[in-house]
Amino acid sequence: MTRARRAPRTTESDPAATRAPDLVGRQWRVGAPNLLLVADFTYVAMTRGFGYTAFVVDAYAGLIPGWECSLRKDTGFVERALRHAAAFRVRQGHPFDDAIHHSDAGSQYTAIHYGETLMLEGMIPSVGTVGDALDNALCETTIGLYKTECVGEGSPFRAGPINTLADLEDMTSAWVAWYNQHRLMHRTNRRPPAEAEAEYYARLRTGMHTGHTE
Image 1 (cartoon, rainbow, N blue to C red):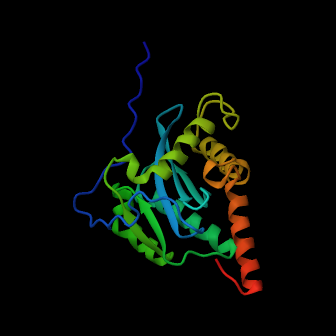
Image 2 (image 1 turned 180 degrees about the horizontal axis):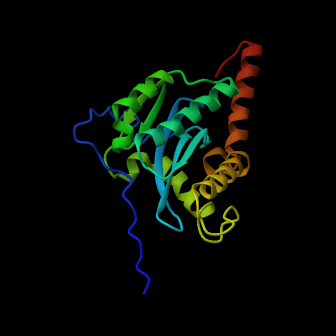
């Protein structure tokens, strides 16, 4: 008999941590990129034990500017996903500027060092409750797609067993690239996230040239 592995808990609060207020109130619709970013992480069953994948998702079109895989669910792990997101936006020419960063109340996201990183990257913390999926529903939805489309059995991004961290990173990288560039999203009238963002900035540039802005 094969004993099923118990799934690890991903949201564990720190009672001593100072928690930022919830600035979002489950209102996920925003009018532009870089206004609201949501963050969370999930576990992935591997051949031995579990790996973890963290995401930072832009609420405007659902684009994933940052992600990270790890064998440890510590603050440094989710912080790297945040730094990747910030670097991605800088490369695009759209650095964060008082963007709201929303997460659940997991200890990784309420840690002092994580809050300092948010400030340095031009972001304002917003924190929901502990273990309430509705308080971070947008990121939970993205994670659900990841679990089904990327790491699930039969996924075209999964070549076989997930034996190593490199295996997990490779399939996650391929899926995120496909998701950003090709996945049709209901929230953007069935356009991929990257296309929806590009159209927004094109409209913004046109408005600037004609003397009108949105």
